[in-house]
Length: 278
Length: 274
Image (cartoon, rainbow over all chains, first blue to last red; front, side, top):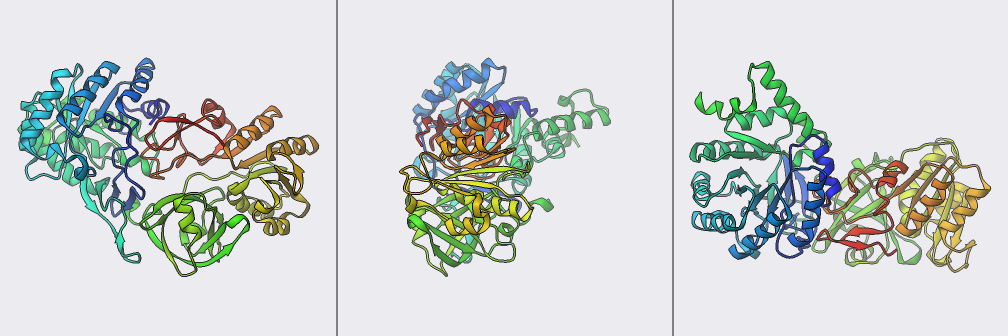
């Protein structure tokens, strides 16, 4: 993932770009098939391919030099690795760090720290010791009580919660009679994820004081406004670009602006969590 | 939501209805698939060989009414497995994907190297159908490695120009040098190319120097094929979705990388060496 492609996303109208997750060493990711369309969305098990955080430092600098705000997503197999990568990306000048402790596709290799409160609080606290910019903790919907995990991240010092990562699922082919993804299971994103992630945002926003960033199946401004009404102060868009083009970022932002104006709101903060007061 | 019901990005099984032996141990695999029968020349599919891998392959026959095909050279694990397939075997398929060639001009020159011929043959066929008489330079290392010779001779007659690196057949030298000679001889108004990247970069320079518009089909490490993962990025573009066919304006934006460097599966830059 190079600087020019992220720059193009920013030029498409995004307020900031979130990188693919960066780890301590280069990773090729899982073998193909790693992504397929399913009913109402996409199932993927990329397996965290990335060139390593150190290699990516230059890309972050390049983006920063051209005025693009960068949220550096990162992961590690251990708490020490999370801390080490966070320090590197801070040094590179990322505007925020997004702690990915919720990838459903590498559980066998490195577990999922974000699956329980103790680990979530510990990894967040460790990263906060070294991180200079704000730290967003990205949570998994594949847990019994996401509010409890969000509170743990807040106790660890998280500056915001991103909700959510993908929902664990699988696909099987009836002619070939085997799972389609090489990894067998993958993460569901796209419109099928939206009702689940929206509920997660609602529960997290009700449980913590820090801001919540909504993501999951946002394909247009209406989806973004739904997330905001449920307590999100910002949203992320990914899977929608499979069908549309990169202009979707600007379309979502403009649509939110129109909605505010047509409904007599002055700024976006006025609609955050409004449905929770109803 | 209607756009999110069945889509070409969904994996489905296809049954091979014919496997044809081509030159140089290559195989053309024929199958019936409705989305592929309305593909554009230059588009590709992702083929899944269960238990092995899933790889991008240019569509070498757009089967309007009949079967479509891909043409495979056994080079890696996945392509060797594909070349070992027989009629009746089932594999998975997603696609067709990407932006193919756009027919422009009245006097097209097509320059293909090696398996690049698979991508441009449906283009040449469509051109002939539309009353154009394309010139096709088909380059290979030696005569035994020339693919689709009969198919193209039947289609193009005198319009087929063979070129071999070792001089065993036709022009003696690189296909890009052969293209340079032909460009000087004829009045062309559009150039299309598919093959080894260093050849395409040379063809692009020769055509661009003469002020001719170029369309080149690029190859990068494609994983998702739908524009999401950016493993195939070159400059600001995704080869899987914005390409694989790049026009002159796009090629000029990626000159730092075109013919020079690409990303390995982890996303690190490595040199383009062929």
